[in-house]
Amino acid sequence: SAKAAGSNQWAFFKQQMTERAAVRLRTEASLHDALKNNEFVLHYQPKLDINTGKVVACEALIRWQKDGRLISPMSFIPVAEETGIIIPIGRWVIEQACKTIKEWQKKYNFALPIAVNVASQQFEDPSLVPDIKQLSLRYQIRPELLEIEITETSLMNDIEKAIVKLEQLKSAGFGIAVDDFGTGYSSLSYLRHLPITTMKIDRCFVTDLPQESAIASTILMLGKQLKLNIVAEGIENQEQLDWLKANDCQMGQGFFFSKPLSQHDFEEKYIKPHTATISQI
Ligand code: C2E
Ligand code: MG
Ligand code: MG
Ligand code: MG
Image (cartoon, rainbow, N blue to C red):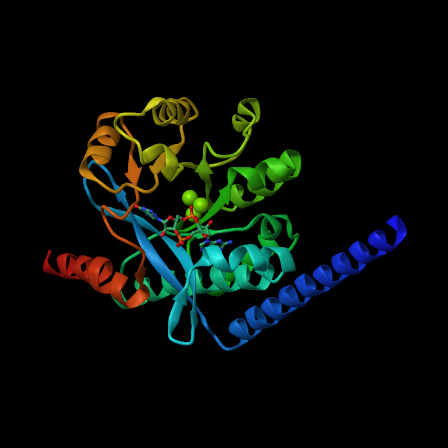
């Protein structure tokens, strides 16, 4: 009967829900353990000044070291966001970035800005701003050395609240970048009011340069009008770089320059050589 079929479906649905909830719980528990057992690491990818070719900043990107393998953030950040554990993970990321900034200054006398990615839910957490301020004070780092990357989509969830929060961060001196720009639904009229310092052109608009350049040039024009720094993400070849240079894009990031590197490798390649040139002067 229809009733029996319905109740069968319900039982099946319930079983599926229970399994999904169980998987979520297991993943949440293992992310919790990962945090406790120090299994997360930050890799760093340089951001270059396109005109001079100099490394002017970097982005911290999280990885999970699990059983000798490195797990990509794409496979655990969404679960972390779903379960809320992104809040302590995100806080760990910010603290680790502050430590690294301090370390590079102490060990190499070199101040390089680090950008950290902040998830939607983390951005909405009321303790985000006080946490960031407290950490930068504890590690005695200048706020302009810490940059927050937030996706366009996160900002548009509650634009009025976002503006208030960004205002607090910006007035405290932290850098603010809109990540993956062009992939969300920004209201262009609001963009003017967003207290941001940087726009990152999403990789998907860089990939097809120079053949398909309509969106990239529009974002570059917009950035110029709004007096924002523009970073092009995902530069993989000379042709893309040439186009970006010819079109006044100031900064770039991508495998063409470097993949994200472990802290050790990043230091060897980008921090130590800098120390050497300073001491030769
Ligand atoms: P994202 O913030 O947009 O970071 C850029 C991603 O593009 C990184 O992937 C980077 O390795 C990759 N990438 C850079 N240059 C190139 C290139 O030339 N070609 C290609 N194909 N890819 C390039 P990754 O490290 O796997 O991170 C993926 C995403 O995971 C990030 O995108 C960000 O949304 C998220 N994520 C990473 N670390 C964190 C974190 O600490 N917290 C949060 N909430 N999210 C993070
Ligand atoms: Mg980013
Ligand atoms: Mg991005
Ligand atoms: Mg992204």
